[in-house]
Image 1: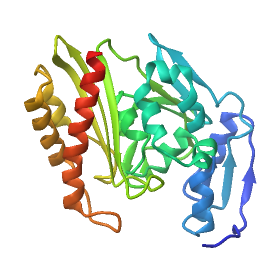
Image 2: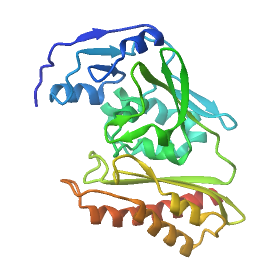
Image 3: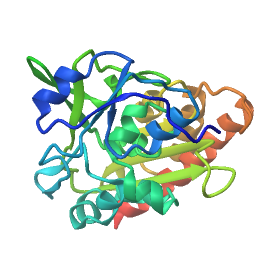
Length: 289
């Protein structure tokens, strides 16, 4: 691996307006924590002409919310900051559980949750829980702001819906209905490795029946995905063994994994079924509790 970075221009703006004016195409990269960016620059996988740091823009490192207002966090909120936040512990335990599966202290201390999303890797451990909780992404451009569902943010592996002169400034997670429970499951070669498969589920129960369900999968398609068919078949059904097994099988059918150095497509599909089954059982128990 190359150790020396090739020359580039470095900018430290102090306002969002300055940032979005500088950001324009693949030759300009935004630096938040730099965990992914610096590594790829050293490997010559990314060769930007300009790097725009967010570190001197005030007011982007917040994690805020409560039970009725949900959760929101800014572009400089680190993974550790989110994991240790009392707001997240009380209201978005699913997100905390997913971040806890990232074992590198250095990655969580330096890396930001929004930076993780903007890398647009299908193996993200952050995206599936946000899918399962119905998160929305706030995007700021030169002339306007927009907010989109997280499902619309991921376009392809390594590609997002961000246009020229746009950055993500905030993630908004709505409050969860009463009777809700979630769970996150991950399979990887080692604890430090990226996911072969991961799954996040959120269910809302009333009188033992499923009122709502969201099942999100990672590392089994070019982007994180929702298992819509499995979610639909669960609604109105008792959360019993039969429902969970049928939903898990349906979720596996929604997956379109590839075979690569880390796993085969066939193994990934089978593990989707197993992980979703385990996650639904755990989420249902938490919802009932």
